[in-house]
Length: 70
Image (cartoon, rainbow, N blue to C red; front, top):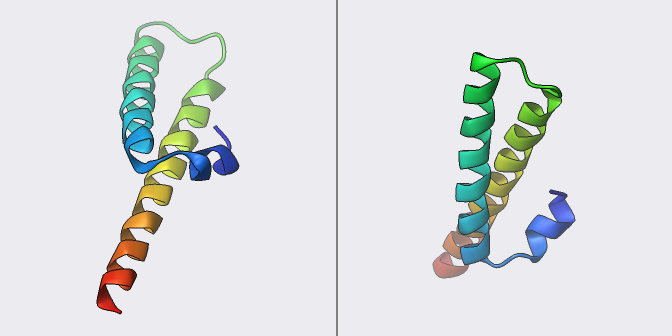
């Protein structure tokens, strides 16, 4: 998922997406441990997507803190 797409999502949608992507990442890691994946780069892609979502959520959280301080 691209950063531009992540920024367009609402916060509840991001939370839902984070949960889905995290579950998929865990599933891929377990499958890879049992038998090698055809494309192990998928694990890295999911890990990056989860990081992007977490970063966007944190950015929004910090924006709210800054707004409440003013």
